[in-house]
Length: 405
Ligand SMILES: Cc1cc2nc3c(=O)[nH]c(=O)nc-3n(C[C@H](O)[C@H](O)[C@H](O)COP(=O)(O)OP(=O)(O)OC[C@H]3O[C@@H](n4cnc5c(N)ncnc54)[C@H](O)[C@@H]3O)c2cc1C
Image (cartoon, rainbow, N blue to C red; front, side, top):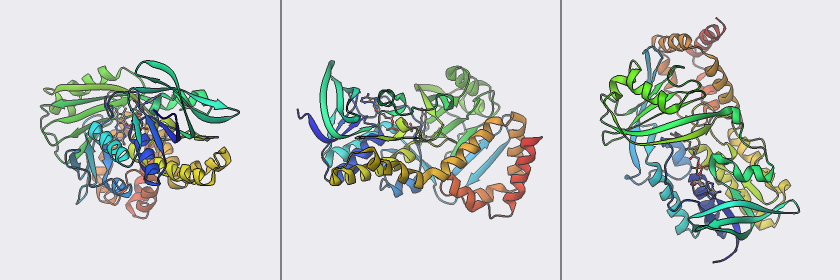
């Protein structure tokens, strides 16, 4: 097996594979190490994605077996059961089977020439004189195999093991929420083409719960929380929530997984000499919803572009690679700042205010205003666009009062 590549990618999730795919399209020689024996297994995600942004990445339409449902909007449920829906005239989002989605991106990358090594865990990066030179890998239980490259891309997800070793700033641990995600069957009266969101500190303190119906009568149900035991909170949601329990009391859990979500926005530095971090590893996740696939893959595409330029110029210095961070920030810097502020505001809102706010949104016809939000991933810009609607400043004033009272 060859021990030198132009680029090594650590991690075969969507962001690692998408970096590798884009590099291979430029003709770059890439080796990708994935610690598991199968791509996309075990899954840990609801798989809810914006269609427009998938198209932007060149990934939509997806093969039909990957897309489990499409959605025209969302219904938000307040803690005491009030609801507010936003519905569009055409599908805005879809839910993908994460295992099949990850495999699909990996297969495209492999077809483009990426060399995949499964059962291969990157244990550490090799750093010489301040330059990342390669990785040490445990392959099929054999530790310490060395592989060298001009650039190493860290796409190992939220664990941040490699990042810690490089000395780069890691994820803000205070901005982590613990999530649980379950595939269930026998759901009653799910709104087939709407995602349902349940708010309230009793069920998902510091975040929210979701119900995402899939076409075969099943659903992805989950929640994330800053405090409390996610499994117990999920049971409480399914058995006691005034609305969710009616749909989920008789549901059977087929598969369940637990995983943290980072809500802190990108780490402040994502590059070093010969090194880039992408996806959850770099906390490239929306602070409002924890969605990281579109954000991370958008950055993965930029990482591939910058790594290719570095290879052409034979310059792997952090000065050169810093352009990766600059370009990513140009794409989402503003949106992430708005989302971080929104997250803070939502966290500080007591349940009775959430009830009032949802009631107000429904009564004030804000569903019509929110229908103009096409871009659920880059929410800062969407917010600016809707601000021009005369109903919105009034609503904001109301929210401000709610916040202050
Ligand atoms: C419950 C839950 C629900 C979510 N729902 C959504 C959603 O609906 N929409 C959305 O956009 N996002 C969602 N997310 C977030 C989304 O799952 C992540 O943002 C996304 O998976 C990030 O992709 P990634 O490639 O960076 O990391 P990952 O998907 O975590 O992939 C990392 C890969 O690297 C491998 N790996 C790790 N360390 C090593 C190593 N040292 N060597 C080799 N391989 C390694 C892992 O095995 C894994 O395959 C959710 C997250 C959770 C927890």
